[in-house]
Image (cartoon, rainbow, N blue to C red; front, side, top):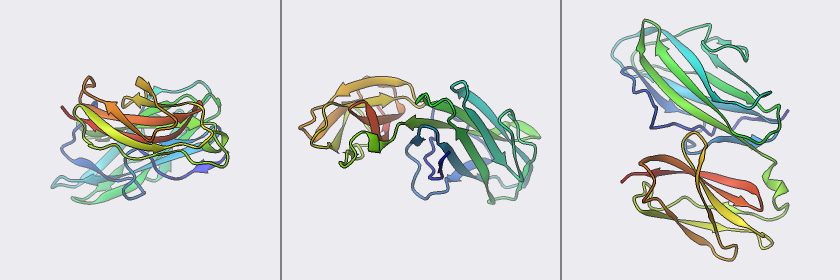
Length: 242
């Protein structure tokens, strides 16, 4: 299997556990915090995160727990925390992390192996918590997504999607896109924070702009994808704030 090491991690606002002591401060690749972890069918995807102790006291026993929200039968997920990596059946880390005030840990790594080749998203929540006070926790969700590969859409042409503006959005946000000359169909898919599609819009293959209506969407974080001839070529984040 090919390994994708680029971090594309999803940090959710809804369902996010606001911790007294912990904060996510980095994701391995500076500035890359706005999309999902995506790769080709059969890939082993990798997500990393950096956790900081923002409290004024040392946390001497921080554990990590995994919650599988959805996963295709046959695929597997495992994660590392502290000095050990668990097996696909491990839900709570075997080792803990000690963090002094303002110290960080970059020991978290989440892996998702696509064995099923189903091209269906897998979604996993990870929680770090103080084992002496389980209510003092921080959680984030990673959506692992798969495709047959952008090169299979149009081998020699580019399909591009530009960040929406304004972001955050109230009633609508404008996006710019470019499509290959031989693109037959194109649409914009809108997904919620766990990867479920909430809307889709057919777009003109001869145009280059589209207004995403957001008036009827609940406030929160969404993802919009450019799909060309049945293949998703790009995914970006959009925040809705009414």
